[in-house]
Length: 151
Image 1 (tube, one colour):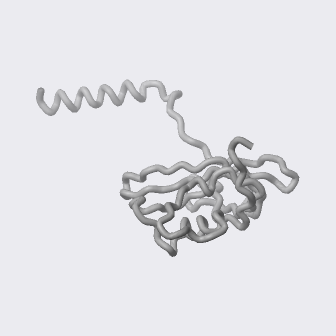
Image 2 (image 1 turned 135 degrees about the horizontal axis):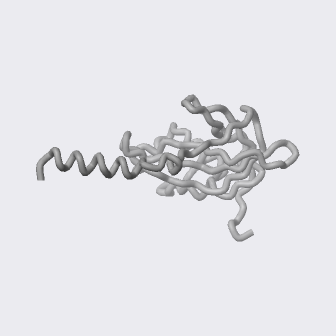
Image 3 (image 1 turned 90 degrees about the horizontal axis):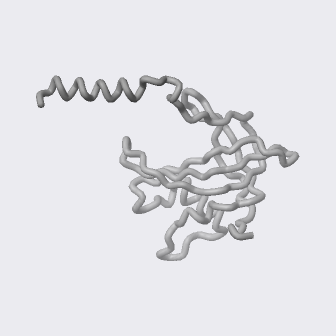
C-alpha cells in the first residue's frame, strides 16, 4: 500500500467520524460567582497529563450557598509531578497536612483518601484563567470533618 492510499483511508475515517456534527460534544463546566462557600468533597481522581508527562489530582466538590442549596459541582486541581515524590513546599503537601490534621509520619504515603468525603468544608471559588472560563475551587479555608463513606 502506498502513502496516498493510506492518507485517503485515514481521511475517509475522519470524514465518517465527523459526518454527523450533532454527535460532537464538549464538557461544559459550571460558572458561579467567585467567593467563599460551604462545600463537601466527594472523590479524588488521579489522571495523567501526557502532554507534560505529569500526574494531576482532581478533587470533586459539591458547593452550596449559605442556605444549604446546591450550587454546583466544582473541581480543585493539584500538580503531582511524576507521581513518585511530593515536594514539601507543594500545595498538595500543605493541604494534605491540613486535611489530615498532622504531618505524615516517617515513611507515610500521602494518600488522596484524606481529601475524600469531607463535610462542613469551606472553600474559596474563583474563575479559571482559560477560555472558555469556568469556576474552580482555588483554596480550602477549612477542611471540615472526614466522614466514613458508609455513614
